[in-house]
Image (cartoon, rainbow, N blue to C red; front, top):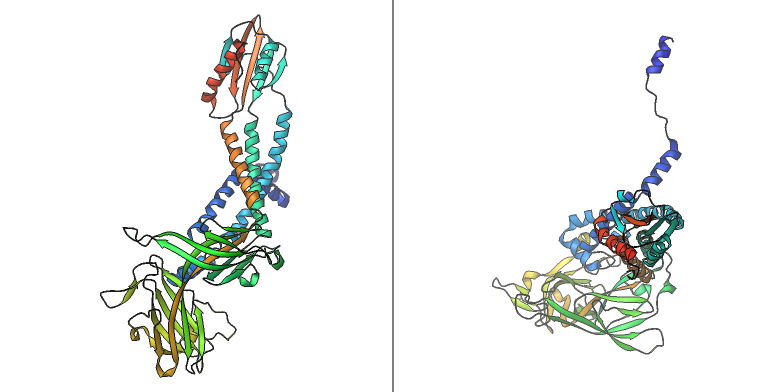
Length: 520
């Protein structure tokens, strides 16, 4: 052997690259492993936590707006990670699809294995039953046929051989395990069906106003990919009254006790109108579409008269809640039709206005006992509403536009809140602002989810099947009859259940020993 050949022989062999197909096979096996499915299921539950802790645009967009006002920098970071839209985010969808694929990869081979296991007969009895974890000698003259008969009464699957009987039961354990995974898969499919063929929408309705279930009527509408305008159930209703009750004394004074919306509902065009009392967790359901009451607040009524004596604005203005405990709310009134200059007002509504020791005012109670409106600012100039750029109804104007407007009245100029019927004249004959009354508003979420019932059935199946998987043990019992003597041995095929099987094995031996005892 030459020196070169010796060096080559001493070199360690290089591993053969597995190639693209090998990496794909490894990735598929890793993804469809049970450990991966459990990790993805944990991540799926973990990913839903932000959707429960943080306000979601699809449910409470007004709370998201309040969060932006109170924590603008943090809110921007949350929005970058789609934490205000968790259940429609890219990362949540990625976990959803990976879990779906992993479950399919787990279920298909396990189903094939389970079907083969069902066709397999119990194994032959070992020669030395005394070596099994559970062993007992059987009294009486027991024959092989009699032992097989008694085990069948105990619902064992039985196999008979020359001088021995083998019995096995507990197949429902694997059935429950398999059904649990199928139920999880069904739950994911149901959620997918709801996302494709369902829709959600949010709308704010003030007392006296109505709502018709059309796309244009929503403040925010989130349809599934297969939803069209014709898919919506054609119902409508009018909010005739809204009532809220609060704790009036004690440590929890001001806490909400209950609130209800009284509706006049028309299920479809031409149908008779009927009353409905809408409450929290008691949605209005029409043709599978559910309308939930999710919030409420105040909508004070104002009348704005411009410098030419014309009414430029009149009606209720929904206010954004600033302090939940007292329902102190911020309001914006815009009068873009005012002449000669457009008018805008920044206001604060106090349901129960009381003076403080420093001369300022605050709300002492969330109920409408002594309503007042604080004027924070009145402005004239171009509001920018005709610029083509969308504006929030809770914002007077963008900062760059507001800086160009002329301040007419500031908060210090009106120290006392306006009461119902009070007027605020603007300087220079620019007009007047009149506080004319108070209404209440409610926020609704209208949902149609065709996957709701399938999801409920899948969840029920998952609960029953996991109970089967946890409560049932896979166990085997063997009987040998030779030289006129009979002996029995048993073992479990489930880890951690040997102690529980000892009592059952003793009962089985008693049944085999005494033919007059009933199988349990």
